[in-house]
Image (cartoon, rainbow, N blue to C red):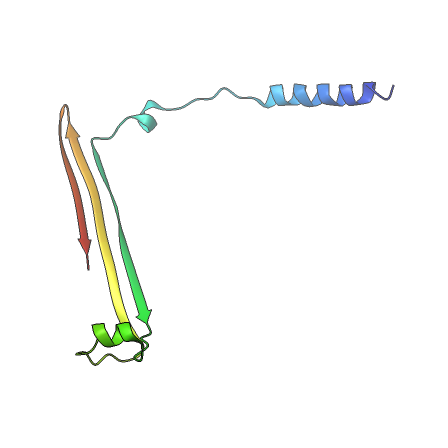
Length: 99
């Protein structure tokens, strides 16, 4: 009797899962390849530098510059990826700008 209860419980659960299953449907328009694609990203990175003015390397690289401590530098990047396709012909553009 102790083994019969878990088997019955498992059977009931499996019957419920089979009843709940539905037929999977999808639309072909969801998976069709589009004739164009545009993607990319914009990145902005501020950087805060601290300079040890007594270090040898700083004296060599910054001997002619009056650099405050710390100083701020801004870095940025724009990357664009686009393509257009019509039949067998296509145009692909990849643009990268660093600032």
